[in-house]
Image 1: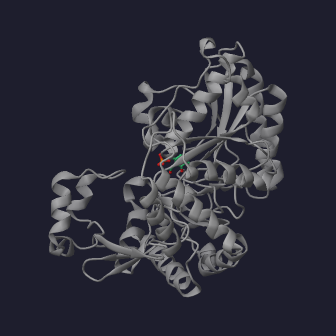
Image 2: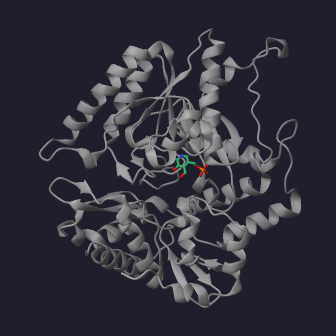
Image 3: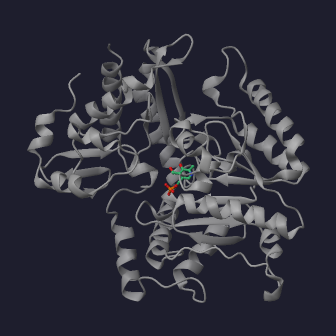
Length: 457
Ligand SMILES: Cc1ncc(COP(=O)(O)O)c(C=O)c1O
C-alpha cells in the first residue's frame, strides 16, 4: 500500500510546513510527517473535523477519548461564553468560585456513595499523581510508611513520571524505567487472553489468585492498588469482567489497602454506565476523572475521595498534615463551566439508554470481521468497540509491530473521511455520543474495509 501520498502532503497549504518547522507533536515519530499529512483542522462540528481544503473527517476516537457531545456543541459553547463574562480564572488556594463548588456537588452526587471530597487538578496524569500521593500521605498520617503501589499488567495511567511508573505498557514505560518507582504488577484479567473453553468466571478467579498472593505478601508495604476499571484503553482496549473489581474491592478492604479507580478514560458513560465502577457495584477509595469531564473542551481533572481520607489530613496547621499539592490551573472556572454544561446534557435525555442503541449499531457494523482470518477479536463494552488484527488467529499471535498494520488502517481512514487512530494492531471506535446511524454505517464500513486492506500482505 502506498503511504497516504507524499504528493498530497506536499500540496497542503502552508500550515503544515509552518507546523513542522516549530512544533513537536505528542506520541509521534515526527519523521512520519515527511510522508503522512497532518490533518489541518480548520473547524469542527458534531462528529466532524473540517480541513482548509473542504475535506472532512469523522472523529471516530473522540479526540483521544475526550469529546462526548460533539465538537462545538451549542450548549457547552454558550455556558463557556457566559462564564467568560464572569471570571476566566482564579487560583484555588484561598479562593473559591461557583462553578467549582457546583461541579464538586454534582460529582459527589453522581459518583459511587462515600466519595464526598473533590480535589481538582488539570489533566489526567496529574489526577493520578494526586491519588498516588494522597494515598501514600494518608498512610504516613497513620504512622505507616507504605511506598509501594500495585498495578495491573498492560495498564496505562498517564505519562508524567509518577503516573508512568504505575503503568505497564512497555512502549511508553521501558525507556524511562531507571527514573521510575517500581510498582508490583499483577496479571490483568484481560479477556483476550482467556484460553478457549474457559469460563469468564474461572479465568477471572485464576488471574485474581495472583493478585491475592501478591497483595497478601506485600500488604503492609502497599499504599494502593490502581486499576483502569473494565477497559484498559491505551493498552489496546483490552476488557475484563466486573467480577475482578468486586473481588479486588473485597481484598483491599480485608487487607486495608486503598483502591484507586482511574476512570479518566472509562468515566462519563464510555463503558455503558456513567462510571465503570458501577458495573461492579464498588466504591473505590480514590476515583480519578478527566477527559470527558469537560465534554472534551478544556483540561480539568478531579480526584474524588472519602471523608475518612480527608479527615486524616485535617488538623492544626502546626501538625503539618496538609496536602500541599497544587497546579496553577486547578479548578479553572471555564473548564468547570464546560463540565457543568456537560452534566446538564446528561440530564437532558437518557444518554446511556440512547448509547445502548448506538453501541448495538456499531457492533453490528463490524460483526462480520469476527470471521476474518486475520482478526483475533471483536470486542465491545458500552461505547468502546475494538477489532484486534492478528498474524495468527488460532494462537492469537500479534503482527510484528514493525509492520504497522494499524497505521495502514489509519491511512485508509484518512482517505475515506475517517479519523481513526489505531493502537498498534487494535482498531477501535470510541465516537462522540452524538453520532447518528448513517455516520455509524460509514465508520464501521471504513473500519471493515481498512482492516481487510491492512491484513493483505
Ligand atoms: C486511564 C488513563 N489514565 C490517565 C490518562 C492520562 O490522562 P492525560 O492524557 O490527560 O494526562 C489517560 C490518557 O489517555 C488514560 O487513558
